[in-house]
Image (cartoon, rainbow over all chains, first blue to last red; front, side):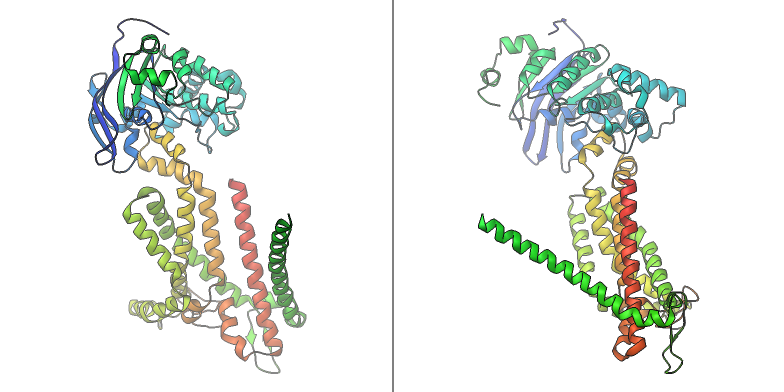
Length: 258
Length: 283
């Protein structure tokens, strides 16, 4: 638990509402700020809107039909709704619940998939460098450097998830969003990912959705607790866990619901 | 326990019935075609003669094999762009929308139209249109038959491909979107490659249907027992020659028709086998 005082905020969420159907809000009037080079955990029981909020941060929620969004999110002071989603998603990357490397691509191709998907042409040595750096950053390089041209789906679940992190950071984004990235992994793979996140926050800002409270307590610097679409409470993880202000937060932390 | 045993026995008997039925069909096809093959040997396949005059009887299946293969492949070529784009529209681009649902029902509706009705439509609507273009004297021929055949197999190819395309995991598409891919890029770099073998399989199954399709083709192909000389020339297919001639056939001619049926069966089986081989290679 990091207690660095006064970090500046990368993402500024302002009165955000997200509805999947008219007047049925999954996220209700959420305002929060995500601080640079820290891990912010979003917690809450299933259906509380934590994933929706996370997806709102790179506008992935817009993939659902009939979605309605009100309010604003600023990325370094600029509204993400005024940017192209392509630019936004390059600056705010994402890792999903289940490892999802592209099955038709090799490990190497998976890491640079963001570039090839966007038709960005790179020289071979640039590509090689990006692949090696990204794989080193996720501590996967030594394990796969001999098999870069094998399919990514041959890797173990934990390795696949690290490959997906590598793919997301290949663009060198500002923010990395992680949607329960360890929920499909075994304890050893989970702890490797957790260690990795601790390393990655030196370079990136991480936002982590988790329903695993002890994970949030272990690795996050700031925490947000959501309930029924509302942001009930947020603050430094140490404070929120030891001295919650809201009775609902306390109830959740003590296992009364969730 | 005994209920279990009864279920098992019933299932076993049903499966055995299917097995016996198919074995019976194959055996009678082989048995029935023996006289023709004994008389003409391999020439039955390579020759395109079809002469039922008593005394100088000669039968060869080449004209019908050619007609079947040409019309089916042409139909498949015409079908692919329609079915592929429609399945993308239904299962990816407009998935879960009203328009996609409507289109899906229309495609299913097309699949339910009887062959003879397609034949009628081809005969009274399409054929005069072709005549009016001047490309064909009477409008009968390979092209007319293939066009109607293509329309007939579009629904199968479309709904199978759409099924496959909608099975591409959402998480793969999300991964691509999260990397800043556009809709087009997601479709071409993730959806189509992931669904490729399934899409190919659906077209091969469609080809299998086209090979055996009878009524509509019979009404439009012109029923000339020759290898078609061109796109607008008449010809005949294996299924259609059987349908046209079995009623008046006996003796050697009947055997020749059964042999044509056997060949059609073998070609269809081969196409399905090839399809599975391709799927294995891609998977």
